[in-house]
Image (cartoon, rainbow, N blue to C red):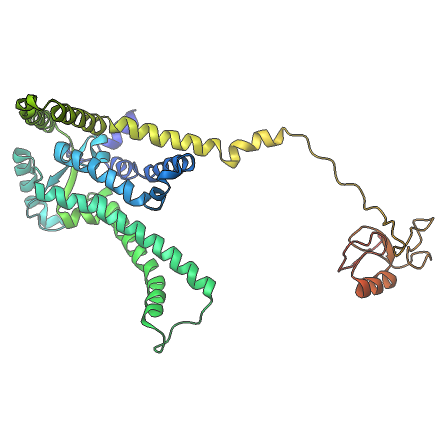
Length: 377
């Protein structure tokens, strides 16, 4: 606990979150989409009517996350994962640059002093831009990743020569996309790493390049922020009471009340539901993994080895000699031993010529295509 408190308060600014907090909130949704896809596939297996939903699992997931993130951005000034860790977004106005220099320390101090008075509240425009970062960009990135893997697999399967100027434009675009996408992905990941490293050493106030482009930063929720959230919740409750004059239309009023309560419960208790979903998915994944099944597999008895091959009863098969030291083909003592796939030992010359001619074992008549020499030590 003391170590976590020390890491949390490394910065002199009490509202500045640590890098570990930001990484934790950034990875909160990492296992949510696999869990959602697992549930959709499991339900579709038992209910074929929703089988078409499996094709649009990504779209359905991002639509649900859109409503969730929109609720938290308009109510708590932060995304679901940010508010889960007690963070919110702040608008910086006209901040000079992303990386701070020694000459700009005074201007940065003035900005921080002014920000304590107005708390740099985000606007509706900032929230819409955040929606693009939280929903649209991850959706497009997942689609590009899927397109890249599918296109790369198709090109490897087709085994076609590299495109030339005479090739069609479509083939050239496919090859160009497969060649360029890894560099674009590496550039994006590298820029995120640079911003995180600069944030760790307090060279920038932006955790990611997207926050730099949006001119927003993440900071801890203060007491005034909590008061604002309570005020917004009271305002929303007051707006919901405006439907009270619709008592004459009882069914419509009842329907609105049910929808409103369901939306409120789903949005405000989503933290518990998402945590249960993720932990449940990880438990099921562990339960059905090979590691969890290894213990039960080891307790099973080892099956006995198969018995030796038996000579064939057909007249065309060679009979076994009385002595195992004699060759089954020529009946003479074995001097240069070799065996076939059935395990019987012969003269090397006898068994080699027989297999080359008939492609079978002379004793069992099973298919045989190779002979192994036996060396005595």
